[in-house]
Length: 277
Image (tube, rainbow, N blue to C red; front, top):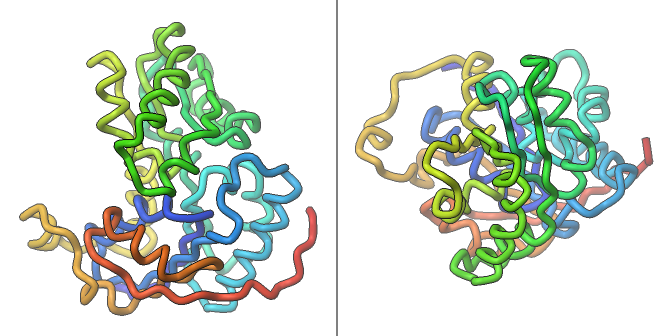
């Protein structure tokens, strides 16, 4: 398979849900994951801040000579796709989650759970209606989810309380589909399924994004480990790098439930000048 170096960006741990799906599909591909843990969460920052951060993060990935950028962060995609595309240039494809999800959603009444910044941007609504103009879309900001998920205790009763609150308007609107509009939220899938009617479809945009990325990097037969339901091992990801702007040891510990193994994590400094766009 063509060994193209894939750069993934996120504010913290959430993008690991996307990386895990990639490792299941393409375990030998080299990845560079950058979690901007020093500035997580992004969801309550201003658009100007998010665009400035996106420029800095993608500038760093560009210095690592990535061949493809996967925006494993809905908030950055919603507010700074043009910034990322401009810095990446014509030679480096940029793939995101929002337009990927829009291509697979089939429902007519769609609820989107997202960070406050993503929900306020209306990006999912625009993308979904661009494909299916008559789709009714309700986007709900969920400010409590990311900070609680990043703490690592998915049994925290505050998560259930928050989920009850955020789902109320979606249930009232009788949605038939709920899009997990933040890469942290797939970890709440079991909880959300408990609280939603059985007929409601949950959509993880990462699945659609991985399908699109596969077309860029080529396909290989599903590895034996995936057929057996096993996690990819560190050896399979030996060509990959895990980088954070905050505490690498804390990230490595927290990443274990997401990946199934403990990654080696390095701390990086983002020294590119931050400029508001």
